Image (cartoon, rainbow, N blue to C red; front, side, top):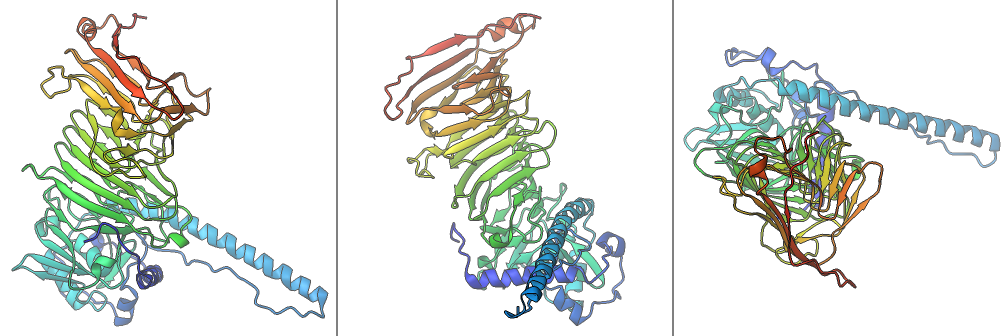
Length: 580
């Protein structure tokens, strides 16, 4: 499959019509949840929906929305003004304008209610538990006209063929233990809209996400090669996989943003990435298509992965083709690729931004950190980056970093490959202007907001150097509007390792690392590379050992029209803070 997804005109029209139809369908029925109305013990005599209702539910409606208020059309006057009756003309024009304004106000109100309702229903859907057996789901798909042939099971080859959104929604209501190893083959001629409910045999089913904590999905997720399925995208406001194993095999997946429910704080790909325990690494290519961009004023997603669990490993390439501005906003720590990397997790992340509009990352939850790639990295986690950065990173009350919000004993490195955003090969290119904002008592940094080192650079704590080579990065301008500690690389660096540990920053930069503070009253400590360097107090029982640690800075800056050179090497011995 190709790394870039084309958006044929016929695909845009068909998928757009499908989204409109699902909105109409969701409003036709009073919904009953699958958990309330149907368990695996339900009888085979459930009443099937009519053919007329089935055709209307072919493309599912809003993303986790039980009911939806009708959109109200703007009212425009179609009257023809009589040139000979000036007063009548003026009266008609006034009435027409008033009706149009009223219609627009009603439409704006309806859109706001839709977004609020979607968030509420998303929370409700998160509490539902899949109850169907795979056999029962297949029987429903054969007995109900609306779901006819939308889900077919071949036990011999362990393959489930799902057609359109209704098939994928129905599968998500099956116990994950029954399909965790199956191949899921996707078929469609119009896309997979998972943002609403599917009416099957009189019961409304919502999309619950595939897999769960006990049985994460580990099979093959593929798009049917005998049809044009790979040309279409998945529209969802909930993670495609509730729990995904590193053992899973994924085809390139194209997502699109719903025109009706364009704001979600849920990840697109997976809520949780689970370590399979056999050393396998998940490989995934994700594309965000430009579908519906002309109908969306504000778009937000919850990144790609919520949590990479302990020891999990992944290599993800994300290509953004969505032509409007895109916000990444999570429910805790927030990052474009992953919100939280647990201890020992490893991620190789490549970001390709094919549009000029801004991609921003924002953490709004109290104390949550925000990072361009990852929100928070725990002990011994590893992040390897390639491509380009987000343009804006902000946290309401936490740390903010151009790459990672906060890191504890983790490491960031650059993957050597062709550069993006006109960067040289093997370089990571930051946005032309990287805008950062952290909480008033927190830190903001071009690479990492808050960096904590508690042991040496190897797992056994032998004290090897933790190094950052600036020649691997192409810096431009950094604007900071908030944060107590602000630095071009690290907002705050705290080294409390009790084994001799050197944190080294070296390399030749192609241009100066320029950090501009746009709100001086917000920033207390500002450094060209490091805003604040912290350690333990002199009364700490480990202070003598910690004093052996070293900060080494060595490098050269060749900015245009500049003859600036750094000193050969500066070593700063840690001095414990005086006890208060």
